Image (cartoon, rainbow, N blue to C red; front, side, top):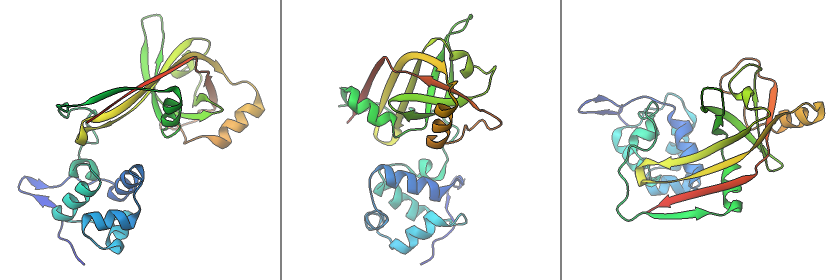
Amino acid sequence: MTEPTPSTAAGPLPVGDLGRRLTLRRTRLGLSRAETAARAGMATSYLRYLEEQPVAAPGIGALMRLAGALRTTVSELTGGDAEQPPGPGRAARHAEFTELTETECRALLATHGVGHLAVPTGTGPVVVPVNYTVVDGAIAFRTAPGTTPARSAGRQVAVEVDRIDDAFSSGWSVLVRGPARVVTDPDEARRLDERAYSAPWAGGPRELWIRIEPRTVSGRRIKV
């Protein structure tokens, strides 16, 4: 089965890590590769090719079918919106707004690895992204001495984690507030190293662990 190089009347579609985006979206929806292929009207072997081969270049027809099967957009699948902030889509006309329980909030926190940390400073609060890990109910992240995240130690801070689905004008947001402290115990730091969700995206030597003990956990969900 062959597919032409993707293009539109306005020019080539943006190139992105299609396989990774397909797999991530499919996993989030709880779909197997066979189920996704059936929804998109294509062979499972072809979907496997798209997910596993970096050189895969499906046509616009295949991309549109995949976007429909995965309830998203072609732009999101191809990385065309990678530089855009989430949330430009229109609000749904009949959206449902609900408060999340603490159990639901903690479950959602455990599925993500990037959050926004609000740190109080002498000139006002500063918000920075951090790669976090949930360990024993606490939020922990690695940083380097002297950085903005490191200034959170010994302070009351807030961490927000959210997910926005522009295609369906839906999403959720979880807010955690509590004291932050430096992890000084070598055994605790070693355990955090072993259970870390991912390495800090900023790169470089970042061996200082900060642990946030949640005092309040709240969240909201909006859906159509």
